[in-house]
Every structure is written in C-alpha cells, then in structure tokens.
Image 1: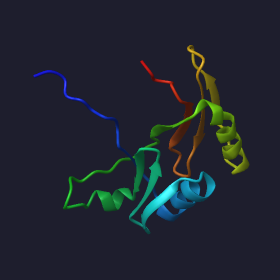
Image 2 (image 1 turned 30 degrees about the vertical axis):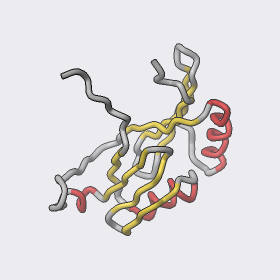
Image 3 (image 1 turned 135 degrees about the horizontal axis):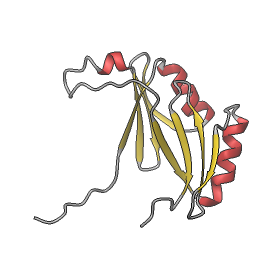
Image 4 (image 1 turned 120 degrees about the vertical axis):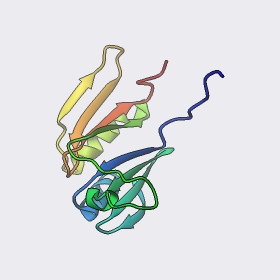
Length: 133
C-alpha cells in the first residue's frame, strides 16, 4: 500500500484551570491570535499553520459530539520561530515578565529556551530547522 502522507500536526491540546488567565497569557502577553474563547470552557489560538487548543478538562471530559478527552499534569510543546527572530522572541518573553527556566544549545547548534505558562505547562521556543532531516 505504501506510505500515506501526513502534512503535520495541526492541533496541540492543553488542559487549563482558567481559560481567561490562559487567554491573557498567550494572546495579551505572547501575542498569539485568539480566535475562539468560551469562558470557562475553551480558548483557541493560531500558531503559524497549527492551532493551540486549551480546554477546561472537566468540560472536555463531558463531551458527547466528539470523543471525550482530558488530561492532567505539566505538558510540553514548542513554538518554532525563524532564526532571525529567536533573540527577539526571548526578549519579548522576558519583557512580558515571564521567567526563562532554561536556555539550551543543541549539538547541531540550534537554540531553544523554556518557560512555564500559568498552568505550569512547559513551553519551548525553538529555532526554525531544529528537526529538519
């Protein structure tokens, strides 16, 4: 049958305690485009060609029209940014009053840094090309 193509991961889901606090963090402080917000239920953001979907886990666990989903714990995901904008992104995060938890230079020379969102999810910002074949 051969390998069928996958274009990428379109959605990343996080589970959050307070959707308004999450909206403020990702939209107001980091500048992501918030395209849907149902207070107490969900808040969605655009991130390049992908979307970051943030749900109240109690509400998403009660879904009936799509499979139930929910989660707990501190999750990890990464935003990819152009190499030319990496330092500006780091400065933007610091200027927003967000503490950088770790800076890393990978063996192939690409850089990334890590910080926490209000629900303690581990957010990474990586230079473009990090996972290129």
